[in-house]
Amino acid sequence: MTARVLLVTSEAVPLVKTGGLADVITALAQALRQQGVDATVMMPGYPAAIENACNLKQAGNLPELPGGPGTILHGVMPGSDVPVVLLKTERFDQRTANPYVDENGAEFDDNALCFGSLAHAAVSICAGETDLPVPHVVHANDWHAGLVPALLRMKGITGVGTLLTIHNLAFQGNFAMSAAADLAIPDSMLTPDQFEFWGKMSFLKAGILYADRISTVSRSYANEILTPRFGHGFDGLLGARREALVAIPNGVDTGAWDPASDRLTVRHFSLNDMRGKSGCKRDLQQLFGLPVDPFAPVLAIGSRITHQKMADVAIDALPGVLERFPRAQLIVLGRGDHAYEQAFLGMAERFPGRVAIHIGYDERRAHALHAGADMLLHGTRFEPFGLTPLYSMRYGTIPIASRVGGMIDSIVDAGLQGTIPDDASGILFDGEQAQDMVAAISRAFELYARPNEWHLMQRNAMSADFSWSGPAEQYIGVYREIAPVEAQALFDERSAAVNDSVNLPADEEAAEAAAMPEYMTA
Ligand code: ADP
Ligand code: GLC
Image (cartoon, rainbow, N blue to C red; front, side):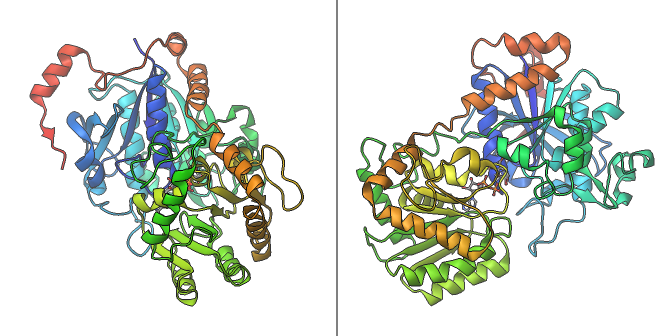
């Protein structure tokens, strides 16, 4: 028998993605499988997920979910051997664009029912109520899966360990108390020592209270969330559960983000042969309609354009920088709050030929940006991990980032003045004012003009180890601790990679294939 883990999430690449969570889930599942753990991803059956998942077969009917009946579909992620379980419901059928908010950015009013159903469905799998094997551990990610540990407890299911990973404490899944009845959550659980949080019912709080272990995605963020500044109201509760809290950093998909083999860049390069980087810079300038100038320092931003990511501060800081450094170019790729998007577009009008903005989500442009820019500006008020600066570093694009969360753990600061340390790989800055950001960018431009130091930083950035194998091993250690006693040895006795994507016994599998309708991919 193999150790089985069900990763419950609201998004995963390449099916549906709004942020780093989606990258992390699929890459982690892959890394776990390579290390002999049978990891399966479970997520909502949004239309895009159902269209793109491969070999979908029905693996159960759940007529009594809170948001209406659901069907469990089982298949494989495209482009990998990672098995995926999709919960198809009428409500998820309606989520054709952003899975959480409507076109005006307002949260859908049935989010509690939708994600409550996801949690109930995961619990049904753990209770053996579907055709899928019961996992030894269920790994719930963010508030969307926050109810899973509590529902397992309420149903008296003890044979499954629970881990809650917090990818971003700012998103909490807080809903009107009136939603509780439909989710089969009794009034007795709506007290301040249970799910109540500032007059609402909180999915994330439920997860923090009931998970066997809680993890978050960097060591620094794990410390930060115990403080009022970063705790988003949960610092006290997390402090009370400190013993259960662990920090496991994310990795980066080093195959997808590899300057030597990237399928989405025009040139390839590596630590030992950097010549291709200038071709990538030229391509980036052309792609964004800026003059091709190999000597212009190109500063890039590539992230959600939101308050968290300090879009307001960048909008304040950058015009002054552009005036002071007349050769510099600025390239922005992202989308987010409308007002910030408009302000960036205004900046492009004010500095023609110097500033280019692409509002939208675009994988090709993202790769071109990380590969071709000289520096990546990543101001952020808090950052649980932060994948984008690490993508940049893989391509020798130097990050200029806020000294918070994962940035502290993954970037070695060159400092704002003086000689740079031998292991410097970027620039970190404190503060949330325009002048703080300007000082950091100015320092980057100063170092850019000193090739020896710049190349040293590039080498350090490109040789940093961000692979998933270490983090996956740490997760396996936690899974082992929380798995039922009789299954713990399975997490030790992992021999080879798990390749089979359908884990039903062979005869059942055949019967299944014959009896079930197949959901075709698009
Ligand atoms: P967060 O999850 O807080 O947004 P991360 O840096 O961890 O921050 O992850 C963001 C992910 O989303 C990265 O994979 C990044 O490349 C991607 N991303 C963000 N905005 C865009 C965009 N406009 N186009 C393409 N990819 C984007
Ligand atoms: C969240 C965080 C980001 C992290 C990602 C994956 O979206 O904001 O810092 O990298 O989750 O864990």
